[in-house]
Length: 158
Picture 1 (cartoon, rainbow, N blue to C red):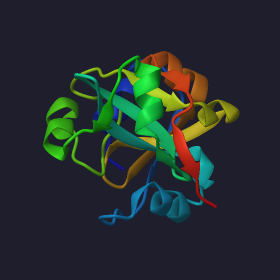
Picture 2: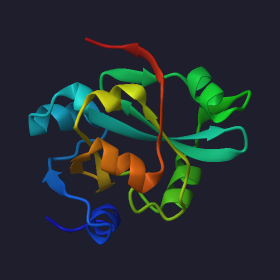
Picture 3: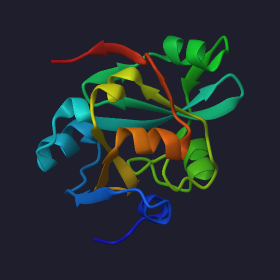
């Protein structure tokens, strides 16, 4: 499988990781990736780009949850947060929608990781390409991207 900017960043930092591939389908999302790869949905994190105040940020939430924009705004210390438009997200990250990752992003954006990620030794997230997922140690990811663990989940799906 081809290396991505995300896996290049991990390798360059000496972070142990596993790159996995699945057949990307538009609209399948993190739940599809988890199911196709046999990963617990709670360990598969969506990489969402949002605007918190005037700043673009990454919000990483498990496949089992939806992002609470209210909680993201509070974590970022701003009054309002909204999802970034696809064009703005793609321009800032250098990745296509469906392949966003805080790893190897063109512009280093602040990263907010849902606190549930701290329950797992390793989590999975997009590696920087559609159909490419990377499994990485949670603490190593937090350190590498400077993520803040905060409550971001609006609700949890079964």
